[in-house]
Length: 212
Ligand code: BEZ
Image (cartoon, rainbow, N blue to C red):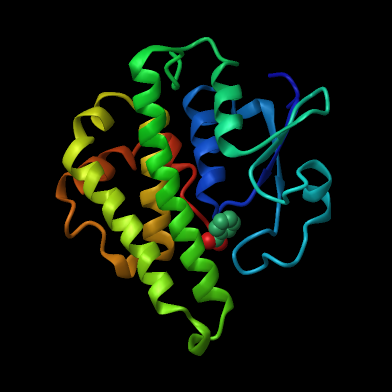
């Protein structure tokens, strides 16, 4: 085993970081990366992480420092890079309609993460009497609409490959369980729920269960 050559700015609760970790597991590249823990989270968005800011001026995780010192961000760029660094089947189709469809499903999952993390910021940081309920509801509606599309249109595609689309959806659902169990997303999405029950037993998912 060679020494790790890359550094991943990491927080085990972040669904965006989890996507990267799952891909590293699935593609056998875990030993290429050293994890650098970042305190950055929705409970500390205004406490800058100086080391992270030096590498990513946006102060966002994940960021991946390569052996040559170059830094990649955001998670989509990191996933694309890492997927081109292994010899197995690509987890992001390189071309054709499959590429655009799988990336679109992954973007839908990222949108669920974005809305979920945004809600987390509002609820964790602002006093209850300052919560903007209409805006919170609008974020929840985004999540509901995205889940409805996955349930209606994407189960067969998610089942066919554990690739960029499936990894992203699985990490989004894992984050809903972590931070928004009150949404009870399984109730209206039985097929997605069954699919998730299955994929969450993969070693890559079990090894990256979010920790808080
Ligand atoms: C969280 O604790 O919910 C979290 C931490 C880091 C990034 C995003 C979310």
